[in-house]
Structures are given as structure tokens and as C-alpha cells.
Length: 240
Ligand code: CA
Image (cartoon, rainbow, N blue to C red; front, side, top):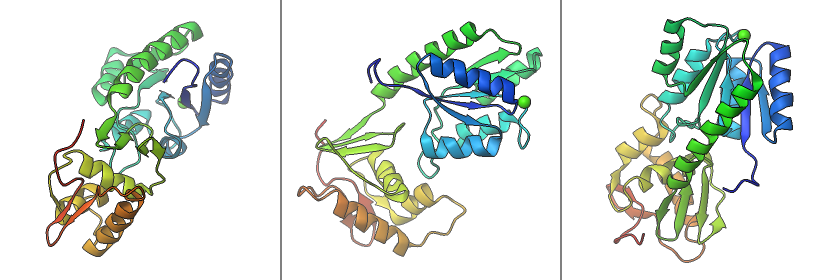
């Protein structure tokens, strides 16, 4: 990603004045903005719009901000649409050392106490984005002609962008962790549908079938059905 592409920042803050102030200033500084006034809306935006960074208030009306941090960091990035590695900066009135440590324990990347200086927030946002952008460009997964970018969930085949459903993506992402290994159906049901939901092997087979069709439009045979056992991504050794 070069400097011309805009980063998207989610501001989750229930105080109207602070939220508007942050949104106006970050927009003026060239960022795309998403705003939420409660935890539920913030999580929903993270699942659907994949912001590059989150500025989070801790005192939200429906849930504590640290619970939001916990949900995000605990997500596996496969079955859930939350990106567990999204950078998060907390902006809060809680100034105690213990509050700060609790924040870092939960996986907060940075912590600013209100009242805060906007230039300082902006500098910290820029520094975090630089670090995560670096990590992100290294995080692309290549399997033969296929490229997967986990933060954006973009999948390209020979440079052409593929339109995959959420479950098809999750299935591909799970298989891509070890491209030549056969994953049993039980493993895939657990990884993609989660422990608690009872996905059936029939559901798995129909998603796998659609994924295989979509990825074979150019004659590739990427998703291999190993009869009676499960699936793997490719048959032979994988080109880098
Ligand atoms: Ca608040």
C-alpha cells in the first residue's frame, strides 16, 4: 500500500463532542472515518468495514471498551469476521496506572488519557499505522497462483479478484494454513463453523464445492476433495 491510499479509522466514542472533534480532525488529516457511539455498533463496523485502526473510548453505554478489546483479540480471524490484529488506541478518562495496565493486558496498542492533545493522538495514530502496515504487507499468503490478504480478506487468483462468501473465505483461509495437508471434515467444521455451532458435513461439502468451482474458472484444481476424509488446498508441492 502506498501513501496515496487512505487508511480507514474507526472512532468509537459515546460523547458527541469528542467523537465529532476526532472525526473532523482525522478527516482533515486525510483519513477515511467510521464512527460508532456504542460497543455493539463499533463491533459491527469492524466486522463489515475492516478499519485499519480503532480509536476506542472505554466508557461506552452498552459495554466496557475493554470488553470490545477482549472480543477482538480473542477472535481467530477465520470463523469470526473480526480482525484480531487491528491496532487499537484507547482514549479514556481513566488515568490510573492499574487502568492503563489492564488496557495493555487486554491487548490495547496505545493508551491516551483525556483531556488529550490532538497532535499527540495524530502522531500515535500515524506511528501505529506505519507499524501495522509493515506487518500487513508481510502477512499476505501465497499458494501457487492464489493470493490471500487476511486483513482485507481479498483473494486474488492470477491477479484477478475472487468474490467469495464469508464461509468460503473462512474455509479457504483454514486450508491455506497448511496447503498440502488433508484437513478432516471434523477439523474444518470446528475451524470454520466454530465449536458451538453444529454445522453438518453436508453444509461443509456444499461450501467446499462452490469454493472449488470458483477457484477453477481458469482451469486450476486448487481445492481437492479427498474422498471419505476431507479436503486439502493443493495436491502437490506448492510454488512460492
Ligand atoms: Ca464515554
